[in-house]
Image (cartoon, rainbow over all chains, first blue to last red):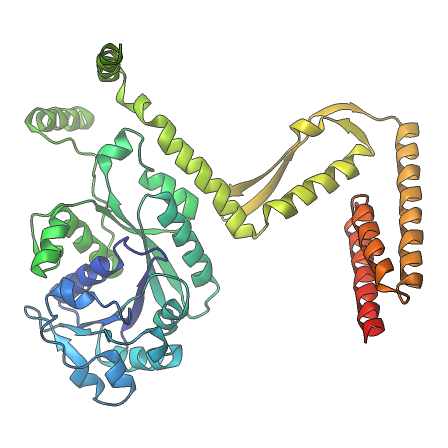
Length: 270
Length: 170
């Protein structure tokens, strides 16, 4: 078995790389695939928190590289889903503790026994980014509809284009606020896609549920009712090659609006 | 007064169509972002852009009389490619005599420049005080340079000069 290695990156910090990694990983595992998540943000690890695994980590990626343990020993299994495991970052070391070759080797080993290896990349374009990208052949660029995030995403796309190993990269637009787009106060999905000229893999609406899910250490894809959870499940399906339409975030809320919407749809059909 | 205008604004805002309200902020962001990304992608600094603009004006002025103030040099994106768009308001085309005169003037300037550079090269071996003068000479002459070949040749000259300077200092 040779799995796919996908790096999740963004350039700018705080746009939701780690949340995206945790959710796509969980969704793919729920769909029955074997998934390993690698946190490469040395010194600033957080993926363990988002998965609720912070108390189970014994060994980290640096322990593997410095041969204090075997790779298998360092993999922490998810509480709910045995298909999902995490290779945590070291919290007490910095980016120089790992180099690109070592990370590539780990990815190559892990993809032998897993369907997916998802690499959560640190912010920035320096060593940490170079390391995270080294073993990957696909990339998901996370951005939000804000100028600074888009500019950084553009830079990252430029760097990914220059890498021969990266065969494809796609855009994930996070924290979209339909009400702001509607009032022309936020760039629309089309605007961002046009500016970056990069194919979309997902549109995730801003969802306060993300905060509570982080608090609990449980990815929002596990919440069947959350809109962001649904959007992330769709992303996973698209990664698996299915054609899933993007969520219609414009749907008006409220009782009257819903009835109006139903009539509008009926009218359209007639 | 403040209270009344507040109330007026709130009421006015309520009746204004939703699309109008934030229109500025979104399109401002999109436009600013497009421009900054063009610069990021092409790696051209504003200084180089300004130089390019100046040289284009020099070149085109030989053939047409143009409105230098309104000349626009912009980047536009077409699909995955970035295109350089030049918009030139032409006042009038020059006739053949004028063009010839302009070319002649250009050629004379070039000759002067070459002479100046040669002089500089001859004297560069002497003292460092003179070297300072030479530098200012080069700066003056660079404004007149207009084609890439000329740029290159003068750059090469500059490099040679500085190379010799190094030797003379040693």
